Image: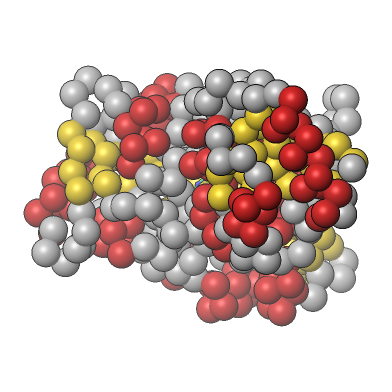
Length: 348
Ligand code: TXA
Ligand code: MG
């Protein structure tokens, strides 16, 4: 398949290209588009055939469901049963990096939801995604636009490396601002009323969610490894997550001790290091990836997936990264890193 790559910087003046993209989607084709989190591999969310094409292009098992993307939060009610708590979340965080799991309506095929009676809904905050969704008269189902087993793509080059020849069009909208996938919550109900289960942490933090809903439960698999035979709350938690080919080890300890350890390691073997900006003067420059300053979690999130891809292309024997704290955006960084490192943490 020939993949057309177009660059869109201004969604207003580039209306013709967006119409072409919408026509491809309407005809059952696949279009990769940028969002504020990561790039999405889009197809018509109401079409079983399009969902099947997405799973095939990505190399993903078809029981791992897709998120449907909408241009306005109120659209959710067409495809799902959205109640009071959804409306409050939408008012606080949409458009934005939040995905909400709701009971699905019949119009959404089981192919899109991986056979589940629920559907994941998200309204992205990105001018190109918004303009594309607006000209589509259907929701756009889109997983992250990486091949299964690669990190989520945060720029068009990552997408081209993974999906060229597998999709009809790639819209290059530059770097994704956030760089980690959206926060996913499920709305549940018990005798005490509605509450949220956090299935995947992201830029909408646990603390922000608790401002809208008193009860937010963090699903076990966010921080811990699933136990043998345990069924996860989200199918995505079950599959082997992205892990670099070169072993990744997370370092936990006093900052001075960790730095001394890294210096010693660099003297003895070839290692790639995702380090804080303030550590660079103490380390040799070879295979060093500057993720931002220690407290700048937004830059660390923005750079993580790109640097994991790059570090994995070096000739290093091992990749080291810092174990993040679990506060704020740190919880999302922690979640992605412990999975990429297969929970390998070295205490210093
Ligand atoms: O930021 C994002 O969310 C990006 C952009 C493109 O919007 N999308 C994304 O999609 O990360 P994906 O498919 O790579 O991750 C979605 C996760 C999967 O782990 C899937 O198992 C879970 O959401 N999921 C989808 N529908 C679900 C449902 N009905 N119940 C539970 N988990 C669901
Ligand atoms: Mg993904």
